[in-house]
Length: 600
Image 1 (tube, rainbow, N blue to C red):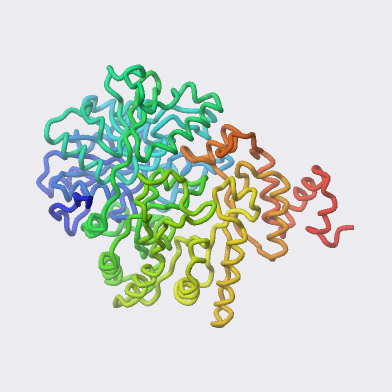
Image 2 (image 1 turned 90 degrees about the vertical axis):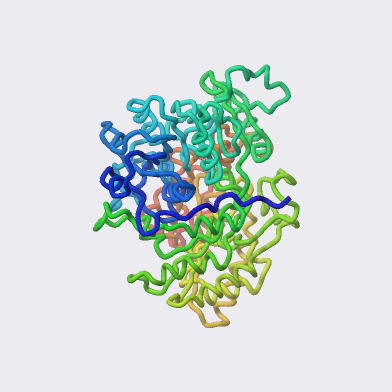
């Protein structure tokens, strides 16, 4: 059955930002607002930023929308400055989970924030969604509060929280908000707004796709017989129970309604909203975004904006299913792609900007070469695989790479556009299916360095990560570099590496270091595994159990992480002592000359 398009309504708001102050409301002749969006990010009116995107969608539907960006959480002055909204407050931490934004993998405080003016930290609190909700409740007790964005989306059921080292309730329960609108949320939040505008109570809205709500009081566990009930949040403190809960959730949440007791209240997790059609997605990106920070920030650079200013989102979703990544749980695995016309229209807007230099830094999504890819059988109803690519690409996956090349060719023909790069990265295992694709991106769409994400070089670790075997990465490198050599192009491949992932022992760390040394790869940075909520890898970190088998696995922690990091930087004298310590501690003195050939 063909999906009905629901997003396009009446375009509004051309040549202005969404209001952030009473004076801006006065200029519009607005005494009150229908909806106020509260965000932990600075307000950048660009479709890459969730608050702006949701705000424009709601405005386009006819609602009066205002934004409170990075409110002072130590008083009620900021949170009350726009008054009480007629329908609801929408609360988000911003484009990042506030705890990930604030702390390194070693739980050390960061001193910068890419989503704040001048990159300075301190503009948002820890656990921003909860703090903002509590602040609203103090001043507006009867106004509904909806939670959205990445922090709420990935804490929507009981989850392991790395920063407190415990299993926490759904953030809906802990924050005392009314509803979570998870994922990308355009359809769900429009439905909520429309139902509230019709006079319905927020408590009546408990079956909207893409939402998590409190279940009505008469729906006890007994009344939900034959339904899928996740273990109570308190019971999930037991690691085997948490492992079982994670597996049940991952296998069912895309098509089934789930229930779970959290803090003494039953929550209802509805399946995701239906993916946006191409027409719906095009309509959203055609909304009148100003594509720049609000004038409040004039003269103050916001690093996240600088990074994406000359880039375009071509699609959403990822079917890669990497175990450490939450994109599939947040954006979904089904790819939602814009049309070539929509993408080129946005490029024309960028090209008209006075400071545009002719280079588009990226046209992509979570993975650039998933543009227009689709499942021949109609995922998710047809399949419970957690990845369309691991351990091998599914034969029902329809690759869209040739159509991506067509789109890139048209993008490069837009007047004023001189070069188009793919900075969002590609899946090398997917690219291997098309020799023409490898040649095209090598010649046209790589600026000098192609960043790929094998994540590790040892197959045992890659299995735990849900990543393809290293032989596929090596084969891609061979083909890509052969093209570059034949075309006399200077290109290099920089691998992204994760250390400390569950299942990584010292032997795997040593072999990773040797692989890097033998290939003379000198990385300048490496990512330490951070257990973020609702990922399979986080389940393995907390439980110490292989997600697939339930068998115990090694989970590196503490000083071992630093030692594993040392092997990645095999060339740096600063890490020599740690490398020697590790080799001696596991009785591998025979490897010392491999790392330090001059050592006697």
